Amino acid sequence: MNDGFLGVSRLAWVALQNISFTVLVGALLSDTWLSRSASRWQSRVSWHLLLTLRMGSFTALVSSAAAFWIHCALMSESTLLDAGPAVRSMLMETGFGHAWLAGAAASLVVLILSLAQSGKPIRYKPVIWLALASVAMSRSHAGHPVDAGVLSFPVWVDWLHMLAIGIWVGLVLVTTYVVVPRMFNAPVAERANSAAFVQSLSNAATLALAILFLTGAYSGWRGVNTAQSLVTSSYGQVLLLKVVLVLIGAALGGHNRFIEMPRLLTCLRDTPSESAARLLKRFATVLHVESVVLAGVLVAAAVLVSSPLPGTA
Image 1 (cartoon, rainbow, N blue to C red):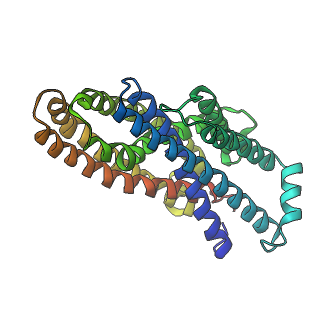
Image 2 (cartoon, helix red, strand yellow):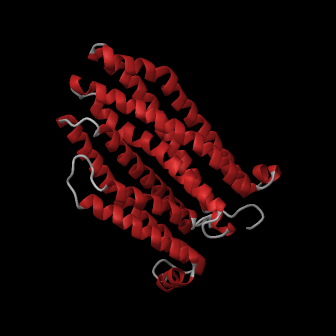
Image 3 (cartoon, helix red, strand yellow):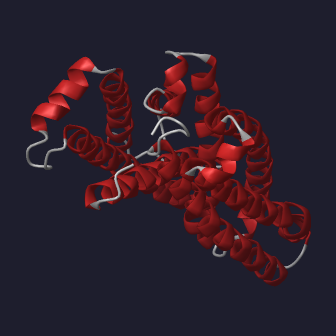
């Protein structure tokens, strides 16, 4: 991993790409659940989720292109302005370039479909989901797992890991900054829909977290291979930091699920709106903290994918 300006810039773009991907997943899931009950309030929230989808898909495409261009410049030891031939060579002659091109094409599909609609709820979801799954697969083929071969077991495990972290982190980010702020202004008639959304959020995040732990344990141990490498290598140390952040995020999510959420759901279904607003604020506060921690997880993931495995530097 290059420690110069270009290396740091590439890490920043990869981290932004990670965040954008999770936001896309979170926006689609949130819209799917909220659109189970059609209303004027739901249509307004869906509109904001569509805007989120548009911004996320544009940011994902741009950040991916920027990271790829910088990667080619680093590999060819050229400047950004002189990296054009290296980019062409990478795209035409390497598996990494082919994987990136497939992912960029899938990201472009998501962007086009998000711009080609004004639907409330979001339309073309099956195609968008397929495109996002393709993006995740292309990124798995551009990372360390592909060393085991194209479509190998480690690649599929990494693909599941990416989707799981996309669901968990994406739901936290989108719920925190898009959905929950609008729940405070939801009419009484929408409180049942809000309660159903919170329940779906918790269930999906819990399942995603379980998959994340299993796939992360496999991929992490495969990467470091020995307990000594986990402690002494830079890759292992960043991996440990990521694990710590995941555990903190899981603890915050567990607090919301087992302490805040049951009271919030009861209030949304049965009690006056003042009590529901107070508990929703407590629920949102924990989500805000969790979102910051999980952003750190995505940054750590960007560092890991850009770092050599122990013994290969």
